[in-house]
Length: 399
Length: 64
Image (tube, rainbow over all chains, first blue to last red; front, top):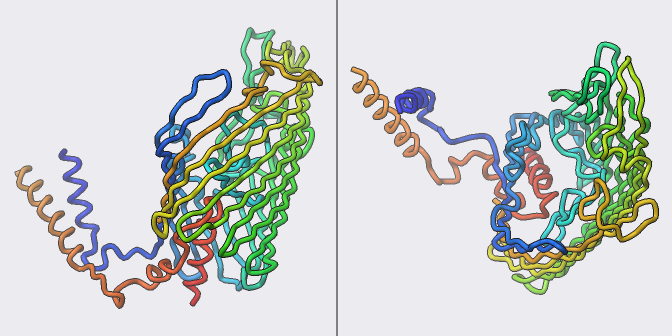
């Protein structure tokens, strides 16, 4: 209590009496509340979820040619360090039509769009789980430059980026294992990693580009590319190509996104793959019935071909490393996974900046392992051959 | 003595807050320019593009 009072006394001395609340900032936010959300996966018990679906808050501050932005992802996993700040960057806009940004945030190359009651597969919008490695790239250290504007008819944004978690290297510059077992016989469960404020280009390098082209007032198309290489012994680089389109008029809105991606990770990484090829397609539309009501439809499909690493016993620096049971089980296997979802719903506009959405979703996943279909269980593939549905009523509010 | 200091601090704090609040006006002439500018920016949008649109709008408005 005393501490609190002392803090208040200190605060009072810092408060300027005039213009005390005149901050040179703008605060914007978005909240989506799941008023009622029922999910049912085949073979499992259905459940009702009530709570916060999305809660994002972004603070913009400007001074002359400099601007800063901080985005708080308040619905994220708050127990993980630093995930609260999804974005925190500074922008210099002193050169006409150019913007130079530096900080932590989202790397843009896709045409991301929310579905009806769920987010896109590119941002975790699934009930049964997806195996795509190419997703929205967020919480990354980055430096970007963009040129253009809507008045010029295009915007191009080029980004150099890196992960905020980096592999730890030993004195020889090699990756270091996390392992269990005796001094001479071990099994490897991962690599030692370290949290970094800025990434080291000797260890990793990411590049991305997004080109938005405004064809007319209603039509916009975009082309994106992404490249990422973990230089700590990864065999191949990851890369992806994106083509997207948006149409918006007083009568309807249409969106499309198509992605091809290739990824490869080290054998003992989390979500490891030797070679993963993936194809993603999203199509959606919102049709405005009148000023208050609109119909929304969204379809997404994802096909993943995933070749696993081969795990065998090997000796390194006098230590014998054996594969774990799980590693041996998936060694050298090829998974082919098709996941798709269909969403439909209706929106009711309550006010200028709030709405209620009622909708349903059906989702299905089909997995084969080395050509064998309909397996009840496939190692490292969640809900391998199953379907699910969801019914939802949510309230969205922008401010 | 301690009680007096805490009481005095509390009075000063509440007094400062009240005086600060009393200096706020709703008249447009006293409202900072950027606050007015952000009013013209989108108040609704697609989840992934909403903040980008607001950011572009704020920049455009502030350059006027």
